[in-house]
Length: 280
Image (cartoon, rainbow, N blue to C red; front, side):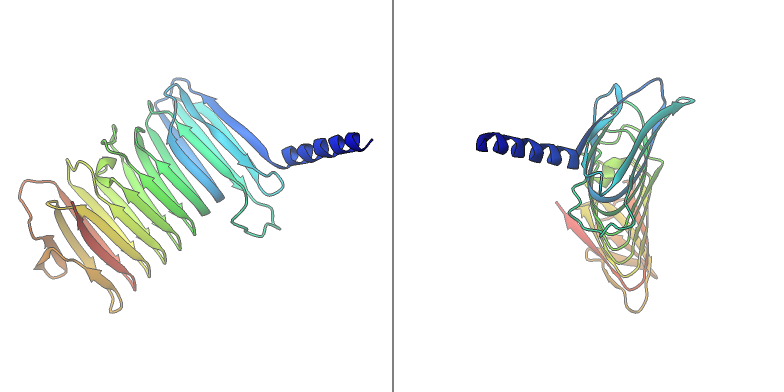
């Protein structure tokens, strides 16, 4: 009798746990498309985006608690364009607890150019874009922590738009020179932004940078041609070691060499700071 009761209790407990947490496997087949447009709205939790199978549009997995969050995940194709949507919806009585047990892995095809539009709130986001063909990356980060890696090799397609905004959160980006974008746009409100321009700089890059009350650290390999032009307020702080003033608020790296690619940074600073660091 006692052993039977114990067995029933264990079975009921396991059943309740399995019903409480849900796991979803993502596997979207891909037809004849020229580009995939991905729209991702991620409120809280952990999100990882990386390279997937070449013949699958999007694969991956989601682990979450249905009582705390609902998921919308859909892939469609129309006129040679793949449309992917991933959304999280939180109930009105959610207490914004960081420990919400939402974990998502999305793996995109490495064969088709990709356009990302990502909006994340209080999230931990890891974008490993190495091996992917990034045609467009637009990202708005609220309070979260974001790591973006473009990889050790140059993006195989031209990135037509690279636009990253962060409010109170933290964003770190590495190997920006490998993004294969000639224009980049960054905005930092009250948070922090780290821009690493490691990689192969084959063409000129123009960087439009807006800083409110946050801090921006820029890491550039030694020997790179850099021009910085900025306007600032009385309360802003700019550190341009290794630069020389060439006119007004325009500065140029000391070891500037003609006929080499140039990173041109045009910055507007409120009460925040910008520091440029030279790296090996």
